[in-house]
Length: 205
Image (cartoon, rainbow, N blue to C red; front, side):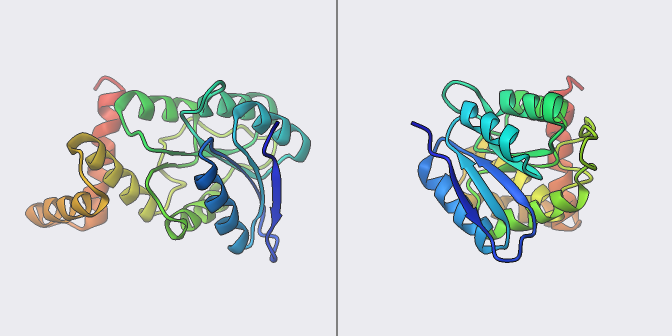
């Protein structure tokens, strides 16, 4: 039995397909995005996600990566190749292989969990502002540029630090702030340098 539901935001800002096999995360995202004014479709597995996308043609898909059966990468590939629909990823993983695959698929953005809805909505709004025209495949651009806002870059940098050093989000933020202070640069610039370093490793450079 699938877990397809539909929650319509009041202001009709756009239609988003949210896919995550964690029911709590799915419910939180669905409610939060609907409250922000989006029409939300949801699914807890890749097969349902593709069926919903074919039927309802959302403006944007927000995909978890690691799911049982069809992964978020599998869904993204289908959305890109057959429906020409833009997508972004939400994942707890920020390793080099994952970043490389995200770049290859041409995601509009890559958000690293844990994130709350107040961090996700600005990223979604940025993705809507930068998504390709319907029918035009998303370019194989860097995962966080140019579509993602500064907040998205910082979120990914925090995720990298959390993953690499087994830190909490608060500890990762403190480390990021300390690194920026030591280099006498803005926090956002330090975040960009971390993300770029991960991308270079992912590309074998």
